[in-house]
Image (cartoon, rainbow, N blue to C red; front, side):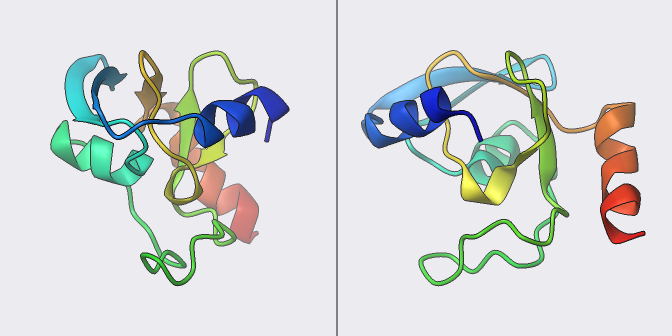
Length: 103
């Protein structure tokens, strides 16, 4: 993952922020996981290897999403929300990704 994203993650606060999920505005605490933000916006992000506070490593790649500004898919369970971010959960690239990773 990009170093800039890791730096932003380390600087996250817990104040409510606005972000976009599948072109819908959502509000979530800064630093919440991307799947939790997606759920609040009515979008489903499947998870398999994610166990809150135990195993947040994103290795199964079932929860991949697109984030605007990044040229690769991101494991949603292993990343947090950031102010103004835009996440896409249901694009063709996201739909095909699990099949590519498990093939």
